[in-house]
Image (tube, rainbow over all chains, first blue to last red; front, side, top):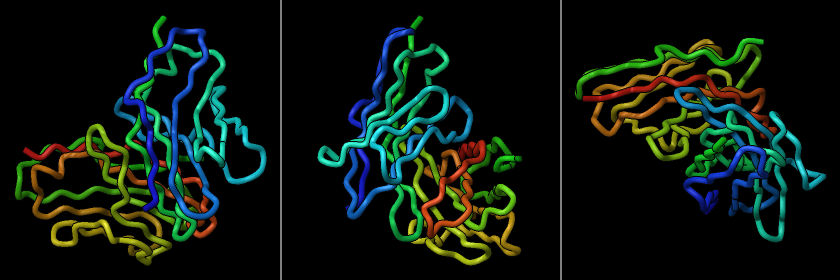
Length: 113
Length: 115
């Protein structure tokens, strides 16, 4: 079955430190992978996506994600965290037929001053 | 460019009542999606439209939920009658073309509380 796993419910980092939010996937074929961020009482905002090509994808607000086919992972990273990055982050995979998005359960990122 | 619009933003109803949500996608987006997001979980697809036709409604509880996109632009999602477990955020999203795995852009959502 197609699925996405985010193994950490919450990630805590200090402002200025690098952050990583983990994501692994299980999908047949070549995956299209996405990261979205959700602030309180807001909808999901698109951060970045991987389709093909370079394994390091750059997105909005200084975020980037590294695709690793052998480990079936797509971890979200940022070199220097900001307090304003505190939010709920979702990894998702899009099915090759029909365009249906399958989401992970989400990871809360808490950046402390 | 205007984003995906949804209304209302919040709704409180009693169980067994009916409720309707409205969504206006980004202009030119052929594909429209309704997702249900229960607290603590990722969004789950309820129904997907391509223009005014249904592509996927396999996860829609059809005994109580219905949705339409009559003119291929805006859409309504209805629940009748509502149950306590329907309390969730209902998200609408749109994309240019589902077949090409285009990025989906989400509206702010409607938070529903069923008492």
